[in-house]
Length: 284
Image (cartoon, helix red, strand yellow):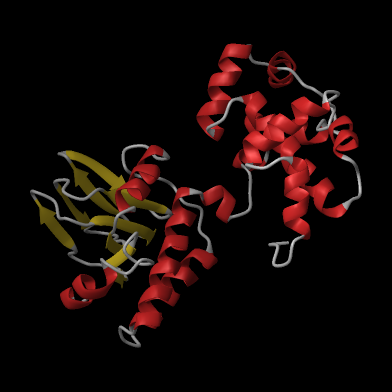
């Protein structure tokens, strides 16, 4: 990307300044490919290998790279990399920056081992990359720049959340947290306790709470209550049920406790929420 485009648009536009591409390319059977940057560079780098082999050295630690693996190199990190001499890699590569870029690269590394996550091959992911390149070949118009960088954010999300992108579950079956959330949804009309959920997960209450919050960002009961309020919003929007009946349907006998819980999460009481839905211009 031309420096002028980066400085005068990508780094300041409200849409692109969060994440934007600085360099991007495709290198088939990259014989003699080699790069060395003792002090790193001020961009994050992703190298996605689809064929052949290569290697990367990050902070003096050498890593071999095979098909369906990609390397994430944080900005300002000393590194060098190259293609295998006998079976050189075919790679898709990109350099990127932006206000949210460090957060993305941290997410990728958290979900990987030794900077080298495995990716199942997905033609839709490759299409996203090709869409970016094809549009950039048309020039650097405002609409093109916004579109390709918004598409790139989607591409990055496919790396961070590969299972969701492929619409599959790890090991062909949901993990214990996913199963517990499904159990919550199936029992949305009950008042489950932490002990009930821990028993279902076959874990101790303390360990279950730790694992659940680590994955979802919420405690189990807080998450369960959020599901209840989500369902309550559906009842308010699409039925004529009273607040009391909605609470009872969700297993909450105290209507006032339900209203307080609803208000805390939604920022308005159930009755106020219903008025907003019925007002002109409501987002429904």
